[in-house]
Amino acid sequence: MTTQTPKGLWRLLDVLLDCSVFGAYTHIGYLFRKRFFDPKDIPEDLSGLDIMVTGANAGLGFATTKALARRGAHVIMACRNASRAESARDAILQEHPDANISVEIVDVSVLADVRRCCTRLKE
Image 1 (tube, rainbow, N blue to C red):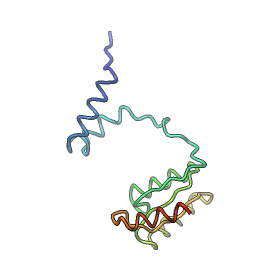
Image 2: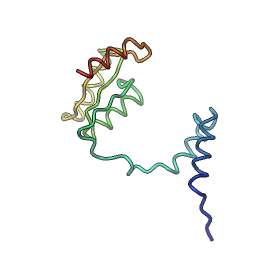
Image 3: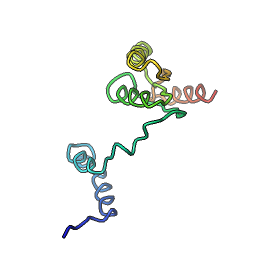
Image 4: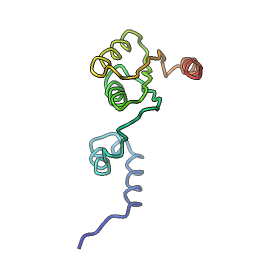
């Protein structure tokens, strides 16, 4: 006989883990949550979507930008440094020449920068 844990209990455990730094930002949190990750939940075709990625010129932001562009989204790279942003954009376009990527120079820690960026994007 197998016993299944009710979905509500898993959600409660997830919330409790998030309440602690240990459960939210360590390997323990990852190990718990990876059981519920299904790559099929991520749509393959993101055409028609505009998605902004902060810190898109390096690290996780760069990897996220590549993955979204590969799936057809219009990706807006929000970066602080123009030359690094353009270099990252060029690197992605070398791998995915049909990618739809634009660059916005913005420091998301400066509210005035964020407002200016939002105004530009609305136009």
